[in-house]
Amino acid sequence: MTEVRVRGVAVGAPGAGTIWHYRDEGVMAVGVWTERIDGRGEDAEPLFAHRVPAAEGIVGVFDGLGGSGAGAACELRDGTRRSGAWVGARLVRSGVLSWFLDAAARTTSTDGTALSDGTALADGEAREAAAGGAKPTEALRTRLVEVLADVPAPPRSKIVSRMRRWLPTTMAAAHYRLGGEQAECRVLWAGDSRAYALSRGGGLQALTRDHTDETDSLQQLVQDPPMTNVICADQEFTIAEHVLLLPLPCVLVCATDGFFGYVETPAHFECHLLSTLRAAADEREWAERLARQVSGYTGDDASLSLAALGYAGFAELRESFAARSQEMEARYPLVRAAEDGVDREWRARTWEDYRPDYERLMPATAEPG
Image (cartoon, rainbow, N blue to C red; front, side, top):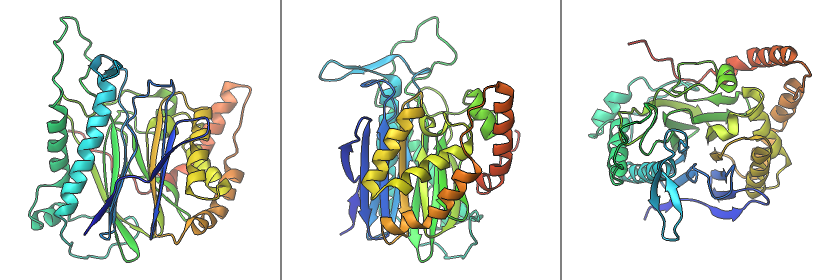
């Protein structure tokens, strides 16, 4: 019988948030969830599910958008009132998990075409049609529309902001299937939460492209631009998709902007991931260190879900990134400049150096309509 592992062990991280950790043959997973204000966090808990022995799983994160979805949506049994953003993130998380479990139950083998490192699967639609089902993005979007419809919207005010949304949230998820020496990954997202691949050769490489008009990752850090597409119950939304093969071993990372949106440059999110890994004795300690680290620099709720695939154990995972961690520390030290101009120059130089590998696996920009 196929076994579904939805999460690992949940424990309170010392001084910050909640963490999860999990280990099985060839798979280790870590989850981190922290709140900027205790009891007010709108990120849903990070998602990790793994099917044994099918060797496929999913990681994901969901950032309820408190600005556009700040209105109260429901009252819990203890009297606590929760915003539409809080409800939306958790409904979408449940919808993604149910979609994964249903899709996994219908899994059929692919044609086995061998592709090189990071090559996108060009024949995705034909393969899905041959499998006898709807395209995954369409099936997932339909599922999310259904779960969001379970919470009726309140009466609209006559005076309402054009930015107001009902049950708004971002999503970034990576569905993986292990086979031989590679993993087939289907990355799905909406909004500005991100998915990455982390490897000792390529470092941290983005697998998603934020749904914002600004496409430069450093400028997104500086400007925090508005999103052009988010999941919500009262307006149309799209689920973007990027399918590729990754060589094993590798690490899949999904994170909300609380993790990557408050660092000095995109390179420094990788620095945080690797410095905490290098100092940890096992996956639980890695999660604890990540929780403490992000709580020290973020200005938002922060959640992360990662799966290390193809490693024999934590010691091998840590050792495989030891040289990369030292290289990152030497190449991208934190600079606290006294003058804003110097800081801007340092950021620009750091990004120019780091950018080629970081963007190597990103999906192409959408063609203008």
